[in-house]
Each structure stands twice: as C-alpha cells, then as structure tokens.
Length: 191
Image (cartoon, rainbow, N blue to C red; front, side, top):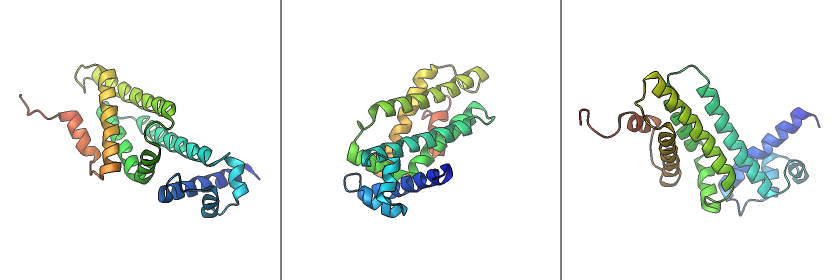
C-alpha cells in the first residue's frame, strides 16, 4: 500500500467513525459498522487503530488539530488585535456548530473527564493564543490596560460555556453577539 492510499484509507475510516459515533453513540458503535461505512475491511481498520477506543481518541485528536490549525492559519494573517480576536471567536463558534453532534456525543457518553489531560493542554494553548492577542491589543492601544492572562482565561471560559450552550441547549449565539459583549460590555456609555 502506498502512502497516499494509506492516508486516504485512514481518512475514510475517520469520516465513517465520525458518522457512526454521531449516529449510534460510542457504546453502541462497533468496528464492523465503521468498516462497512468506510467501505474497508475490518482488518483494514485494525491496520490503523488498535481498537474502538484508539479510533475514538484519534478522532478527537484529529478534531483538535484541525481546529488548532485553522485558528493558527487565521491568526497568521495580518490583522488588528480586535480583528484577530473576532476571527478566533468566529472560528471557535463555527466549529462548535459544524461538529455539534460529536460534541454532544462526547459529553453524553464520556462527560468531561475523558482525555482530561489532553483537553487541559489544548485549552491552555488556546488561552495562550488569546492572551497574545490581548497583549498585542494593549500594546497597540486597541484594548485598555488589563491583565491579559486573566482576560484570556475569562474569555476562554466564556467560549467553552457558549460551545456547551450551542451543543446542549441548541442556543443560537453568533460570533458577532459574543464579540459585541466582549468589546462593548453591558454598561451604557458614560456610566
């Protein structure tokens, strides 16, 4: 098997796994159905993944890498700090809407403890990106002086809460709505 067809086969399996896990849940999903959905033999799945848990963990890892790469690509473009922060918020919320079923599945079947160490690392990296944007905004005079680390922690916590609201409560929260709150707050001008 050449590298290209191996990569294609692995992507087919991952796509099929997302479909099967989202429809049936982790507990009811099995390698046989994932293989059938991917159009690959069961043995073909085991060439890439040790078992269902390994496949699931790889799927989560791939989703985090995909989001991280999209954010890094977006933030590498020349933008003001405010534009960068708005782009970050938009990507984050768009991702939640696009992968809502998978987020629900993960929360429903695994709670918040599954892969806790990896999640902490991922959210810490995201918080540090926000912190850099805020720091740059303070230096450029776009943002008021504040503690960038504390503000990034608050914003990241808010984003995570909004993602949960989108996934669990079917809340309709747009990136613009959240950006409006971040930039303008609730207080009337002059108060």
